[in-house]
Amino acid sequence: MLSDDELIKKCIQGNDRQAQKELYNRYSATMFAICLRYMPTYEDAEDALVTGFTFIFTKLESFQNKGSFEGWMKRIMVNNAISMLRSNSKYALTLNEEAIPDRQSGSNTIENNINAKDIIALIRQLPAGYRSVFNLYAIEGYSYEEIAGMLNINIGTVRSQLYKARKILQNKLTEHDR
Image (cartoon, rainbow, N blue to C red):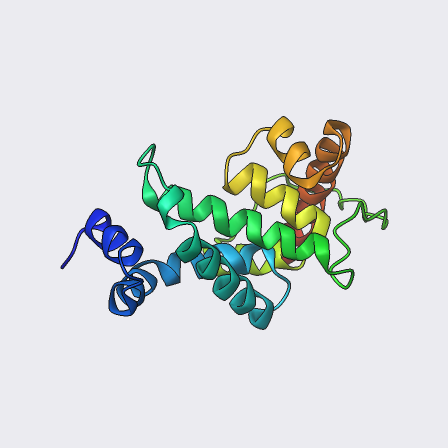
């Protein structure tokens, strides 16, 4: 089995299709999970994955071995998904001013266990703008400033969308607990 460095070199030198296939097979599941967190449908996530890998293969020579290769690819996938959301009006990556239902009074803890699959499903139900901000902050670990720059919104909007996303998720988790 070739190392990432060897695969990268083979992909760059002569456009080796077998090396590209191996690289894709090695990382596609991880990258697809990232795409699923941002895109509203499975099919849209598949499109984002293919577009992201196409970009990765055309820009491999720009990877400078500063940090991990997987981290570099993850950043490309996140940026690609956000770009797709921003460029397609059907996703409406804008501030969604829908009313957030008040949380019912009661316990602040969730009594029953909830698995990761359920949490991901709840996150995917968020409006596109909230989902993107939540993923970038809570899952990817970007700062408010970085998110504002990536989404071309102000920091106050980032904070507001993150707050509202958390509130919606808290309500959904409370409902799930019942």
